[in-house]
Image (tube, rainbow over the protein chains, first blue to last red):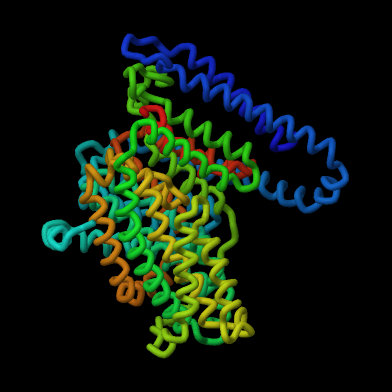
Length: 165
Length: 445
């Protein structure tokens, strides 16, 4: 499916879901004439209109310019295929962040940071040498020294190693 | 405008000097990293300003902006890869000079033209924001609402070819700004009984997610770049050379002023326009593209001018005209500073700190620019695999410092994914950020 068409459908779904949620907003005696749900309902309507516009425009342009689209299809397809191929990789990158968030309360800030640096280095194709653990341990200690010791941020020290730091 | 005694107070009673130097240094380092734009450099440091004094925090962000505009020219000249978008025009003659063995000279011209542009921009900032603030004092709540709408109209110039997508992105941004407690009635909206959402989604999370995390995700798996030559040193231009460059620097300053004031203008357009005009007015236009000093001076003067003049519509009316000023606006909001006219009435010290901090940063740029070059080269030469991990850890550590909340980290990661999907589907992210930043202002007015 065309990306713009898909985007339009997704936006329409977002607008619908958001509107459903606006109906659950409670009334208040402090509210003005518009109320707490007034602006959100208007926004849901605007997004729905824009989504429909995007869908219609995409469908019309696909019907009206088949020749032009076919001519440009070669380069665009290559570019799009390249971008699509990078999506799983980009999501994989983000999952390291999710793993960091999951591990942080258990292993603590220095170790989670070291694991994140090592994980990303491996994921990005760094050669498996002593540099990876060295950089990871160094990075974990460096950030711990900056954030916890220097800036006094109350980073989690981990339930596994409670009392150690 | 800051009086003499205000400035003396700032210099003696506050750490403004150190803040300016720190911001400048961070800005140059961040700007020198290809892919890390001025706005990303500012977004990275934004969480760390959370606990700072508001005046110092905003001055820090302004100085980061100034430093990043110069820093972007370093890889542009040395490896033909602009560190920031606005240094793309510097590549043309800067890299050519490097190929001719004149890299130090090109870096020196870039540095000094940047200082000239920044000083001019700062002078315009000081001169123009004061009269505009008087005009703004007459504003009523209806005017504030109009200003919010005007700010959102910037979307039209930043939609990257599709107004529908820009407006949709802005609407989603506005939707995000409605999460939390309603400013009028106190009713909670879209919180789903999650206490972390009662205060709403902070603009800083949106900025870090959409700018910084999305960029890191995009760079994942990409090829490495050329290495910088570590032996290069800056060679400052002589007085006769500066005299030769004054015409192109003047063109850069004027176009930088114009583009800084224009919503959606920005440093990139100013740099390319000034390059073109400098060639048109040059006595030696045939040298452009073949290592012309004027070809480096004009765009660098222009993009550094924009770093100051883009703050004029922001500080006077609360209208961010670029990504970087949107981050600055986020910084103002984060510290409870109402962007626009009220800022001059209620928080004059913030304005004074921006002026004084920027001046210190611009002057210090000459020395710091020379000293920090080896550090920039070292940083850019680090393998991307490690650099990504360290930047990712820095982002996550910074976000956690905001509220000591893992939930904030989750939101930022989610927004990183949203930003990446928006990039894939060609949706501009700036309108969404503007929607989040300006949404609260529009509704509460």
